[in-house]
Length: 82
Image 1 (cartoon, rainbow, N blue to C red):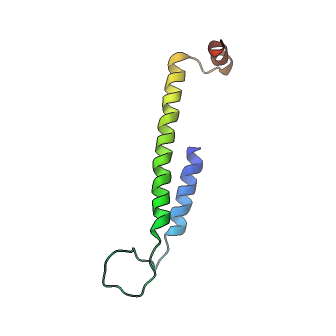
Image 2 (cartoon, helix red, strand yellow; image 1 turned 90 degrees about the vertical axis):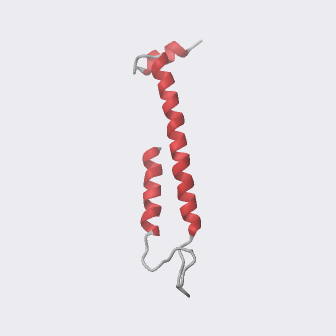
Image 3 (cartoon, one colour; image 1 turned 45 degrees about the horizontal axis):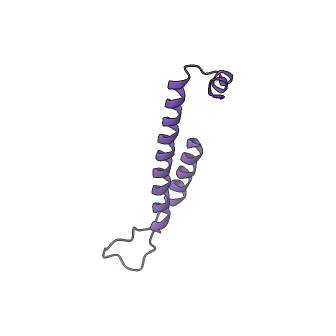
């Protein structure tokens, strides 16, 4: 999931890096094409969500490793069945 998310973010960065676009800030440049800041905000949000998902999965893996010191899925299921 993280690899897919990173790939999408890298793709957006690739298509957003076009020459001739300026950032929409106060400057003396008139009548130019401005870069749209909305995709930048979406990508920043995707990065933050990706980090939070990774942290949540890490907590789940840490709890699973603490309760079950094995990598065998059959043993983990047997230990967690009521």
